[in-house]
Length: 63
Image 1 (tube, one colour):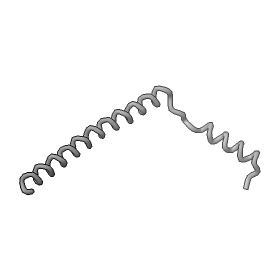
Image 2: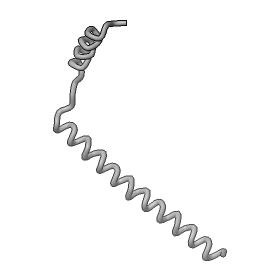
Image 3: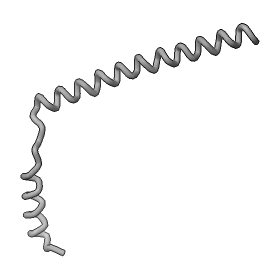
Image 4: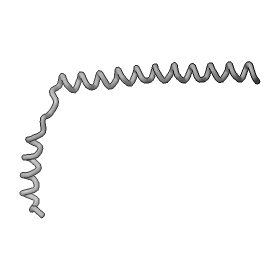
């Protein structure tokens, strides 16, 4: 077990090895996440609508 001073030195050296994304990369990936969330929300809305419409049609005809 390393002493706290050695631990902090090792931690700082490991953090220095991290390649941080640029501001542009963060903005692009954030926009992609929001865009895909909207696309999937619309997709599942239509799937839900079609299932509801199908069940209502079946229940109306046979109910």
